[in-house]
Image (cartoon, rainbow, N blue to C red; front, side):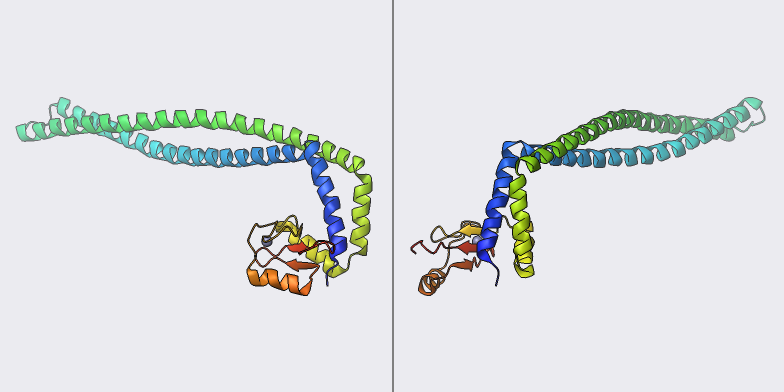
Length: 241
Ligand SMILES: [Zn+2]
């Protein structure tokens, strides 16, 4: 059996902390830091993606540059042959002229692609630089916000010293079963205990079945577990149901 009374008291104390944390700006600051971290990670992913694209295009450009040099070389050789006067057959001459023309066209095409790749990478490099400086800015802002948060949390602890003391006392007095029950549930389900407010769960808002409500009434239960979310629902003994 878990000690519902003590857990209820424990939750009230924790609610007090949450309330004060909200008032003193802790919650807002935590959310702000969380959001900044998300932005940072997204931007980091984008930057990495651009860096990969840059690397790929750079490798293609390098290969293309070699191709361009080979084509230029082939043109020079063909022109030399043509100008040497050693090639006399009209068919051979026209073949050489055709090769030169084809290679010149190919060269133009490759050079155009190369220029486009270089242009893209210039844009990529600029963007990477811009994102890197933005990342640094966010990182520094998160660092300073975190320091501010630590200070605020210290202040909260100071102003709620008695609340924290009482929580510790309760934790010491809870059975291991109750302790585990509360803190395990709390991780995904807060508040863990909710007061009985009628025909639906105050936690998950799910409506209770008629059979369920009838069974509570019949058995005069002090507390029960929501069939839907697993929260403990507390019915004060004095409350009529
Ligand atoms: Zn529920």
